[in-house]
Image (cartoon, rainbow, N blue to C red; front, top):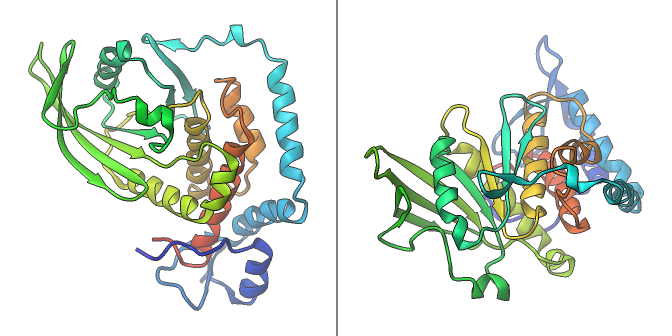
Length: 311
C-alpha cells in the first residue's frame, strides 16, 4: 500500500505535467496516460478522461460554483412535500434506491433503536445480503455513549429467529471489518455476513478540512476493499449511517459515480446524480460537507488512476 497522499493533485497541474505523455494505443480509441512514477498502468479513454478532468477544472477555476449548485439543490429540497415520500420499509427507517445501472440497488439505512435490531437481521437474511456498510464517527460523544450494537463483540447473541456470532475482527486506523456467522434457528440454515465499518466519518467541516487528505485516501481504500470482497449475486448494497441520510447518501452517490466511470461513462454531473437519488429519497445529503466530500473523493480517485497511484 502506498503512503497517504500529502495533498491533492490539482487538475490544472495534472494537465501541465502529463499532457505530453498521452500516447495512443494500437488501433483503438483508448490511450494510456503515462507518468514516470507509474506502478500499475490502467487504460482509460482519453476523451472520457478529458471530460472528467475538464468537469473538475471548472470548479477549480470558479470556487463559488460548488456553493451555487448547493444553494440550488437546497432551494429545490425546501419546496418538496416530504409526506409523499414514505421512509418506512420492513419497520426500518430505510430508503430503497435504484441506480442508473438496473443491476445495482442501494438501501440507505438510518440509525436504529434497539427495538429494530430483530428486523435488521431478518432483513439481512431475507434479502440475501452478504456484506454491508456502516458509516459513523466513533469519537463523538453521542456515538461513544451509545454502547448498544446490533452485533456481539465476542461470542453470540440471539435476535428473535437469528443467532449472530462474531467470527473475526480486522482493525485499521480508519475502519473495521467484522465477519459474522448468521444462523436461522427455525431452519438451521446459516450464512456469513461481513460488515465494513468506517469509524472516522467527519461530523463538521472544520474537522474534515484538518484531515481531508487522509480521510479521502482511506475512504477510497475502504471502498476498494469493499468492492473487492465477496458478494452474493443480485445482492443489494446496504449502507447505514448514524445521521439522517448524509454519510450514507454521500457514499451512495460516490459509489454510483465511480462505478459508472469505470464502466465507460464519458462524463459526470454530481449535482444531477444527487438529484436523481433525491427523487427517490428526498432527504439525502442535507449538509454541504457531504456534498463537498463527493467532489474531493471522485477527483482524487480519477487523478490517482491517471497518475498510476491506485493501490
